[in-house]
Image (tube, chains in turn blue, red, yellow, brown):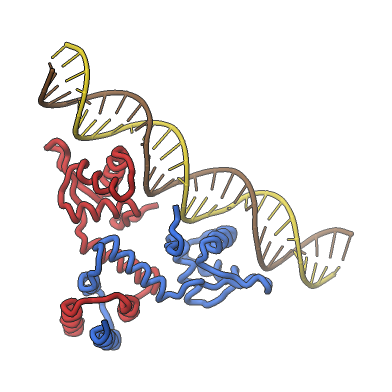
Length: 128
Length: 128
DNA sequence: TTGCAGTAGCGAAAGGTGTCGCTACACTCT
DNA sequence: AGAGTGTAGCGACACCTTTCGCTACTGCAA
């Protein structure tokens, strides 16, 4: 019972997505090199995971060239947003931005990030 | 291979935690009523899930009384924070508060929440 | 005391994730 | 042609999550 557009990536899938976001479109070799460095898993495993992710629509690949080139089918931003929406939904069931921020309070942020956050808040205040 | 203090709740476990956060300490009957309303699962299933969650330390129970009373072993806030930290770690590998905010930008926030966010940013700026 | 209702628990099984071994195909290079 | 190297994929398996059926215990009512 899998919902249509909302295939949340699992742990390893997310690791692969992160690698793709960082590296950009890459052949399996390169993805595997990173993944193996972190987890020590086999080449076959990486390949299989990519295959599974293909069926879930999490990645796309160019089969014209050889080796095939894989790329993430979702952007980092979109994925993050999806996670957050689900998090708020699951944990707070409803909008609770202030609580999320509260949770973030412990983490350190650079001056630049804080500035940007302020700008964003200003923008949010304007609309809606 | 499960890390020591970081037992991330699975999907159903999270649903149960959410129910407990909302209801407060409750007997299985009450938890099950909610869960069954959402998923239509059996009483045995709820009971088993609670048992599993006991071994993981996600819930605690008072066995003195009958029926036993279950309560969440973690607060909503702590759980949310854990999720967020993991999210940032997994998706952005490192601090990226502004990006998280970016992701949140689409969601609507009340004036009060925005105010609170501003106050929080001020506080964060002060320290560290 | 027997029977019923509510409660607790165990063990099995179904489904999903992550892992790999083994096979096959292509493309060199000799 | 044959050997060697890089690439792709299938099928099996181990492990975890989620599900339930069946059993057992408790306490109260007939």
